[in-house]
Image (cartoon, rainbow, N blue to C red):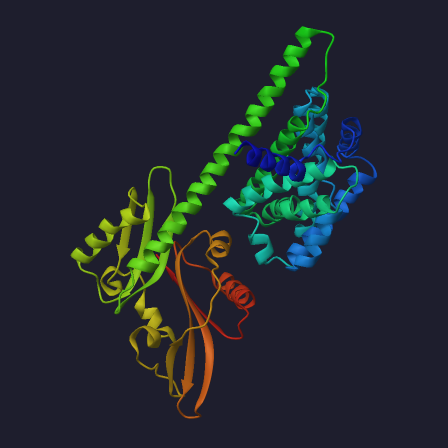
Length: 442
């Protein structure tokens, strides 16, 4: 048994040894320190990269965004903070934080300038993707930071560091923050900074872990009292850095688990023949979560609703409130007087619209992307929406067309110009030729 254990131990040490082929620690420290400073060529490179990334986000070009991330030198000061904490170099920590702050402010200012003067003001899907961090962003930042510092400590530099720059995506959130400022959208600004904060913290923590694991030489001080003071400051920075990251990670994980459980509950339990869920909203809140559903069709009885509530425990939704709204005519959840004048009434009630050209309408099943996060970011006043593809059958010509229809309920009336912009964005986002947009206001 001991021989098997020893053989397994030798295998693990041989395959996973980070000390083998590692660069001299002093050379690695000097290499990281060189990339901390933002001045001269480094600063101009950052500005050019920000402009490139802003253009890529503006025109929704993934290739351009990736190119900008390869050029970006933002990783330097973040790794410098982690290195300084790991080797007790308080001067390096201060220098790295100062340069990171300068780089962050200049990046946001540069992207703000671009988005302020650009004629393209629509928020692309690439921009919207940087406003709502998820648990995957935490994993990517942490694992990317580990890969980056491991690659930086090797004698032979690989292509891992450029890959880390792409994976952790430090630059797009800063550009999105600039877009939020230029467009006056505080949600975009804060959401993007939130993602940038997550990425920076976890890269820093990953650098600190690997530096300590590889036993980098710690800075010694002649004055022991000063050394204790520096050590207290460094541990204070470690605590300030780590605690928010743990809290953020927990919040993101908990929210993701709740939304997945809620989606599974709705998909599996609200599967009725004559009743359809046309809008759903999962509200994550520390005081208590809520699943808000809008139903269309045959009304559920109180017994059926009670049964649904009793089954929520199976999906780990014990402390979640279930709100079901149905009977649209009685509760005036949707204004059917507007729907009567539109094509949507024929989908809901099965009656052809009175038009000069006789037509009938049939709902058809085609994949529609999940755009909830994007709509939530672009239109915070949107409370619920329903979207479907419909086949339009022209009885007089035997021609069949397909249109996409979206009904949205807002907490206040949406101006006509904003409705037209929303329709244009939806057509581009959904990649459809014909779209019917109907807005309702409370």
